[in-house]
Image (tube, rainbow, N blue to C red; front, side):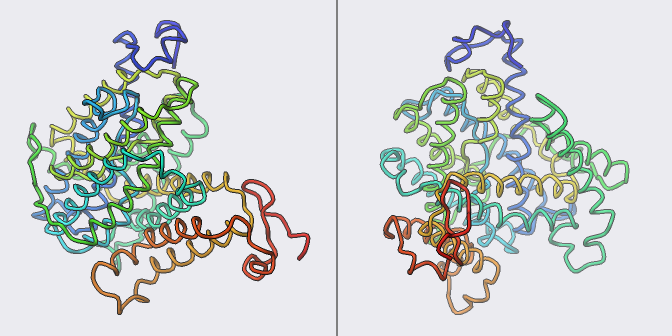
Length: 474
């Protein structure tokens, strides 16, 4: 999308450069379009898990609209912290913030089937976890050694695996429809498949903005098809207010050990993910390494943005990797372009009618988009794992962490005699997998003997990054 009218190559690599407004505005909107669907999806999933996200006749349905509204508003606010900065808070780089998928596996067990009252527990975790996340900025560079690609790749893969079930349930008709005649009908699957087919077609056969916004366009086409089929109700759009300000402690706040521990542990992983995004932006947009000040400021903004979000009923924020790729694609490093995008998000967050319109998307249509998005999360984790040297030591760490984490997630009944906080944390699957991988990576020697691992590895040993080949000694 870049051309000579935007600026010289030197200007385009400068975060402080402002392109002409006629170019900067569409570039900023492009950033919003690239992250919009991913940003509002967690709010829909969590409100649905709590039991008030579906059905416009539900008295709690307006709460879903509010959470969607706050997801947009505070994604914009957190992005401004990164681009405009507030003292040491922010990296002064074109970092786009948005609602994090990583925390969803932690939040669902806290709210599932418990109604709007359970959201107060989530908000307590968001606030404390955000403060903890900001504190990590003081020494983030010193803890990166504990999260090599083996650990981060495992965690990202586990996040995706924990969420793919949600995509299938949505495409089939949503959680409330499970066990009914409406669940899994061909009508439901047709709407979901339209989204998937359009998204894949644009992603692989289109270029530029059409490819970047493939999921969003796929959802729009799916929405149009659902509307033509009579599956869309717009009644709530007319009833929604035209303007509304954020409401402090809208859902209340409650501090529980399970939520605080879960959010703080995930903040640790999210902070390192942000370091990777900052490095990706400076390398892709400016051809240089990120400075310690930029990494520290970005981590502060990540945490403070999340804590403030929790005060007003929004979910935790993090840097969005898809926008890192967009910067590399456009070649425009200007933080002011992203600031324009942030202002659009804030404006959208002040208009409840936009949230009501988003909530009118049939759950099956959203399911088609979610299947693609969550599958991409798994693929991103596997891509990170390709940087791992697959020797026996790393295979054992990965195998044990994945087996226990995924196993506990799939069979929570195995912990029926574990009570309270510990049960919630363990059955998330994500936290035990991450902790086991971190601990084993720190304590196991760099090389394990053949005798110690031959039986476990089945005679397979990695001799190159991301490759598994037959062991010569087998």
